[in-house]
Length: 158
DNA sequence: GCCAACGTTGGC
DNA sequence: GCCAACGTTGGC
Image (tube, rainbow, N blue to C red; front, top):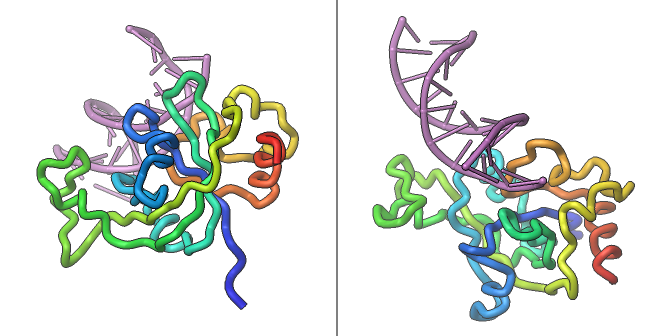
């Protein structure tokens, strides 16, 4: 028996990479590079497994919203943008021999017919404890409870 | 190891 | 553009 799947929320600014970009990507799959926060990294490196489910969130968008779902199709491996001097996420402390930053691959599952705006999620009882709705929440890779994931799907109409 | 200064995130 | 929240840095 395999470990039960886990649930996550990944934030992205649609101006840099949107769910529509993911839909256009080869095999609707992308590497989730550029994460430079230790807590987020640890979640990806230590917790994420192939088959885990992902809520795809647009931040700094109008409105900020959960816009669809994806799944993890490759577990954590080193993020090479960390050792690319020309990349905006370059980190000289990360090297190929001793990588500090990691990424996973995700594949699009579904784009919601209507984005679920952040404001519309507040007040939903099943989401009362959701990390995304916590004041000051900034984590770009967040764990989501199974009940929360299912409640979001329900709000999205299936 | 403390903590002030600073930088970033991201909703509003 | 504002600013609250939070992470990181670095002097001591």
